[in-house]
Image (cartoon, rainbow, N blue to C red):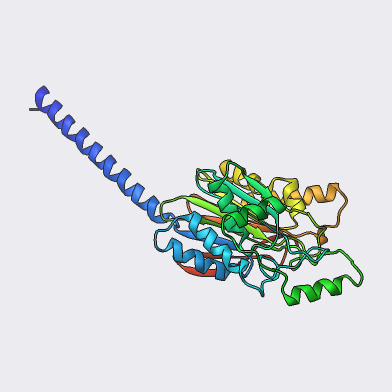
Amino acid sequence: MTTRRNFIKSTAFASAALLINKSEAAELNLKQNETTLSKPIVLSTWNFGLKANEAAWEVLSKNGKALDAVEAGVKVPEGDPTERSVGYGGRPDRDGRVTLDACIMDENANIGSVACLEHIKHPISVARAVMEKTPHVMLVGDGALQFALSQGFQKENLLVEDSEKEWKEWLQNTNYKPIVNIENHDTIGMIALDASGNLSGACTTSGMAFKMHGRVGDSPIIGAGLYVDNEIGAATATGHGEEVIRIAGCHLVVELMRQGKSPEDACKEAVNRVVKLTANRKKNLKDIQVGFIALNKKGEYGSYCVQSGFNYAVYDGKGNNLIDADYHLK
């Protein structure tokens, strides 16, 4: 016969067993979730992102910080004289002057930016110095140069022979109509998630070829060319900077991920807004390219762009791969 005392004991044992099982299940579920996280991981725009990713991965694979990784990564195309759209070797403005823009953002919303900076090969490192050594967010033009020189950066001639030749040829007719996917992307954007689960991003460019002197696009503008929210994810942009600024593109992508959209769906919605505003302004969409890449805290990533031709590089535990982005204009 089951006595009241025995019944209470058996019930207590059963409850304890149930609690243990729930605890074990929760622990197992946590481990499973951890194994599904893809980290570290780094994404960057365009095919020169492959080499940039390799430098970033050197940092990430050794449990380095995402901030250090993205700076190291984008410095690769910045310092390449054969790369005509970023840093040293970049195409000049219509006055024959190479002006550079860059910004950087870490997991704590620390930000730094430079715009219309001349004579400095690595504007991304100057942007980081602005972030870490000044009370400001952005320095521009001569002020940015003065600051860079005060920090020990070396003044150099960034106009390489091939870029100067192209500029002199352009001067023959001065027709300003940048070629989609060539002269109007001019950017490497990079976002990374490190082994500690923290996000950072960097974006750097020489801007549109033969632009008006003083023109600044989206690349150095936090919220336009780059945005990082360590609770949600990160995004960076490439293409026609004016169109990205018009929608505060990367902030929009991150906020769409906050609402539950996947990285690719968030990028697609941002592109759709570009498309809509282009139609409203009666502009030809075929003359515009805008692409976004995004990464969330789970290590999930995605991209979308206005028209074909945009690709991006992804380096994770599976290796370093170049991916063609899906696009709107088909």
